[in-house]
Image (cartoon, rainbow, N blue to C red; front, top):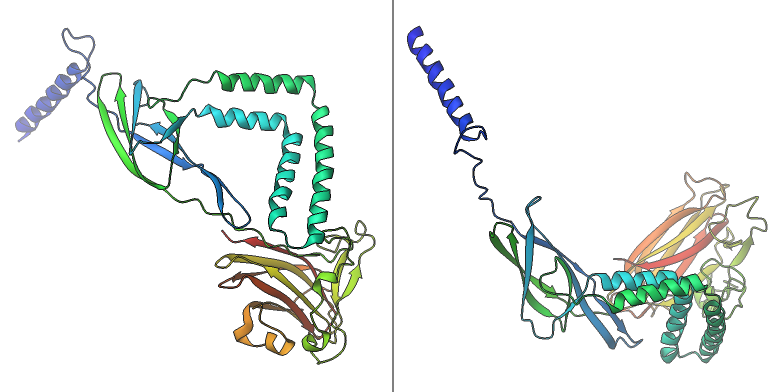
Length: 400
């Protein structure tokens, strides 16, 4: 038995030596095995589409641009890239460096560009603004910004102007993009489906191909963020620089919206005159104050986009001498009385917070998520009970 094991040991050893010799550069006429690994192509794609719509959601223009970056599994061998696209009619090729250079120019002219964008925003709003007083204010703001623009342009240094000129020259001499570029921007003429293929060839002439179906979706208008007037109950925070912090939060009718059927419902204002020494307000120096009797309410109707989803945030603070609550509701615009505001059929969403576990007069942030549904507007409605309560810093965003 030992004799057979001995023979097997030498057979294995001989085989190992033989295999080692096959890859030894010291042996005559024997070299490394041929590299038969071909490239495995892949690519990443990023949608960089831009568009603009007017205030009636009519498309003004759209650039259906997609950035493509090719790659392969080969870390050492040189590679060549060849893109293909079907259908190709109307598809433009953009050098990947063009948007980079354009952004660098904007960075050099940051102040000028920021003012120009603000002017464009205001000019965008005016055609669809129905309130003449707001139009006058917007026009005055544009005149002021145009004056600021002149000053900003005159303040540009020679160094900045030279940098911009150099960047513009770089743009003027950019090589046209080709289907052989590793990174490229395709500008599609229209929404639809396009087959984008990529062939990668290594330095040994081996190649492989991959493709994807790229879906270019129709551009849609950005959902505007609703405007909440006097969101932090600050003086002079209305669009025209006026207001006492409460003007936007008054009910259409005291009697109809009073929890008790009569009497004033106008909220009170709590002022923190020295926020540096007592920084307990979430924003500014004023907050809405609701007496413990529950007779005051806050009411504001805001415009929303049907079908959109929103997140409303705000802060509350309570006295601690008794149990107290604050209820904030999102109501359908057809709600016309306090009694109707209590009916589930009229409540889009609501949240009730109490002073249990709270610290006296310390503000805490809350959030309500709601869907606009078919509504073009909703009512923000707030009421309290039990103890003196404060409300501050409303904000709203479109939920992504």
